[in-house]
Length: 151
Image 1: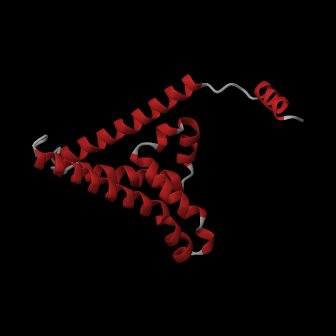
Image 2: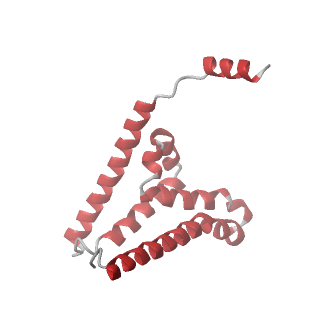
Image 3: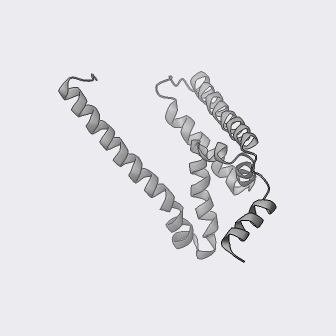
């Protein structure tokens, strides 16, 4: 079978991708995740005396923890299959990725399997986040010293 015949046959047999529906599902689920995060922020501000300035870190930690629990129970995978990037882009997707790697390698033991593979993704995220923050701060420092921006 020639490549052109194969591509024609593939196009005929492949169902069309519902881009509009996928977009709506991703937007809806991502919005729900963000709404839950905002609710957790309000909860911390009301009951634990956090301010708008200080509530971010505990909210993010709580959202990642919830995603890790849902991943361990097998529920976050179903959410990801339904919503696609709507569940992967928020910070909860990071928690899911870390725990998924740990679960995948648990048969190799806790130290070499879970511990060694859990932080493969986390290490690269932290590294690139730190490097990006350094370059953004360097650019801002240059712009401030030239007089284009202010602190």
